[in-house]
Length: 166
Image (cartoon, rainbow, N blue to C red; front, side):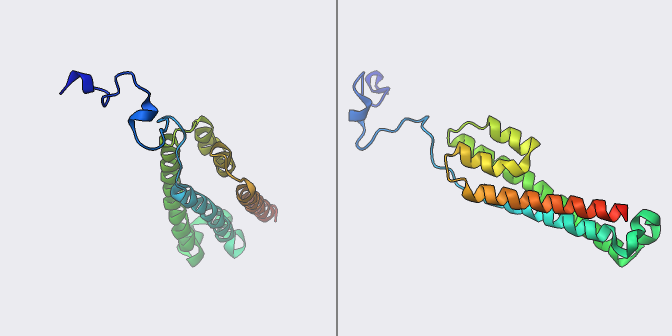
């Protein structure tokens, strides 16, 4: 290899003249694909819906699960509870994988990911809004999505508390 050709023959010349076309800074943010984020927000919504189903199954047969767990888990509602709970655990694991892959994609796009990691760990419903903020995208749909998700969680909480009180 020729010693003078170690930097493509530029030897101190202007890098914009060495390559045809537009020179791009390698640390400039790159476009990021939304595939893993869309899968993550889908699994997040599925987790809330399955939690609602679990809440309904938990209080099936007038709260039999609380009064007589042995007979409840041998009933049809108890078996359904186990199936839905297993699906919820699989979707939760998939959700973790999708958010990690999304953060890796954003990192490779040269964006800051500290806030994304914190939201992914501590406040998953807010992850979508923070992602839109980091990528400098419109925030209308992420806000609507987060409000709907929070409303479903509050509905689940109210339903469970109401069932426990009765």
